[in-house]
Image (cartoon, rainbow, N blue to C red):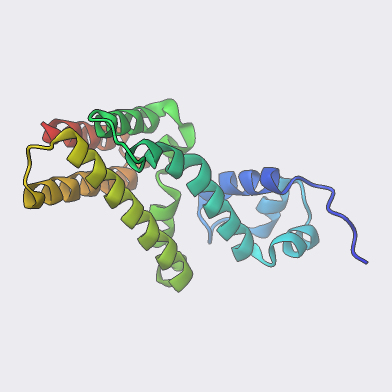
Length: 191
């Protein structure tokens, strides 16, 4: 019979998330994960199977704690007319220092797509699902905010806003001011 776990798996994935988010998957060595989590290699591998298993758990934590709560008002059964404007404003504030990890490191998923994991089918699936959720949320926000638009115009506006959000997440790490301006432009584009 194996030993019972003596650690909090949520705390471990949260600590690993911080390391991966700051340095990236490839650049985060197992000894750094040991330092971040307080667990040794054997315990990490026993609990998560591999460094990649721990990364996958950290990605789910990122989605659950950072991404999905922000999108929830836009994916609700009833979307308030100002929900998309609120999302863009709150994201801009987070990027300009309200969420230090996002301001300093950008989007964990966007960063991972530019790394050695970018060609990994599992990561591609996660990022594709994230993009679909983001696009659906922004589309719902556009529909609530601009009911006067026809379907084609609403689709184009949602696509443009989605593109500006994704671009801001890519550039925030090196130019937070430009990221903030992209999100301000997205807000102004809503009309």
